[in-house]
Image (cartoon, rainbow, N blue to C red; front, top):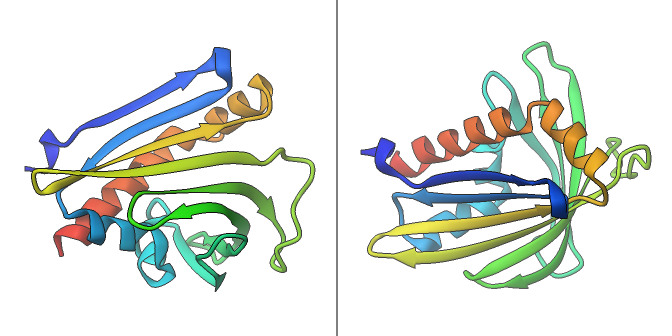
Amino acid sequence: MGHNLLMNFTVDKENNKIRVEREFAATRDRVWAAWTKSELLDQWWAPKPWKAETKAMDFSDGGFWLYAMVGPDGSKHWARADFEKIRELESFSTFDAFCDENGTVDTSFERSFWTNTFKEQSGSTIVNIEIVYKSLEDLEKIIAMGFKEGFTAGLENLDALLAS
């Protein structure tokens, strides 16, 4: 059944944006929880064989999620998401950044701004994700790093988690 789920990935170079529209075969409250609870995020956020490991999570306006992407060799790449505005079960926005293990932002990489919107329709949930970059160069750097493939793999991990 999972193959009929909506998945649109659009790169809008004129506006330095990536848009992802993705359907999940689960209710909105379950999908929301998977995106906002660290113990669930850790199970799907990273593309296999990588895994996500949360160091700190405060899901509130002004709070942040500090986590590492852990490689099969044990190497860790740190990132943080600063929560800007949360509307329970509807949407949340974050400033994303690469950082060190203490959450100090790596300024050699511009932050991106994510807005995630959750809509339930007839038993499934559609998540609309808009990621805005400061410049076309930043957007192209992320694409070249394999963002589409990695994020798509993570979303497929989420399908498996929601089905379990």
